[in-house]
Image (cartoon, rainbow, N blue to C red):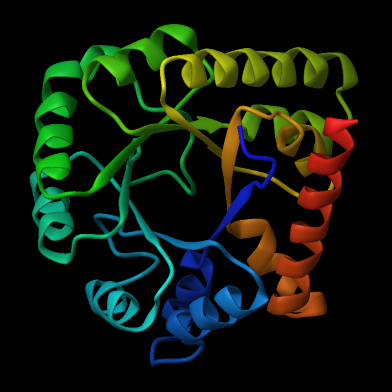
Length: 251
């Protein structure tokens, strides 16, 4: 497993700020370009049913401008499948979506939706698009993802990151162990293991130290922190912490 840990930057909340007032500022495509300059290995966007973050036009512009890989997060709907097949991002990450939620609340239940997800995964892969499923760090869900031909899984780190933020030490130790075991299991099945949700400077270290994980996707915290120190600085500091943790874990 490579020691380098890829970092995907989600620019959704630049679009959220723009949408709060309307108009074109701040421009999420400009933010994507800055993220790449700061060291992002990929750009992540979630095109929601209600378009609360990026728009269809943002996705078009992004694919025209950004030379780094693009990950499109989307719900498993026919509308989103058609959009993905039309724009062919490098990776599609299928996520659960509830219109009333503020943010993604948990992992996708692959087991209960296996037939539907299998068809979507097949269509995407036939178009040359890699398919990731956003799931809880659960062995059975990982096995189901493998069975339908997913390329990767993205392990939901939200519960662990919350436990770190609120200093629930015993709980955080159990949760990071679950993530580590799930990552190792998925890697043994030849799945690419990604992780994300809720990651901060405080919580990134132990996640980044799990050698089976090859990619972290981070958005809300990076954009929030950029208000104080700027986007490039917030990304560069996250990159520094990831590299430091990865190097320490090799000792």
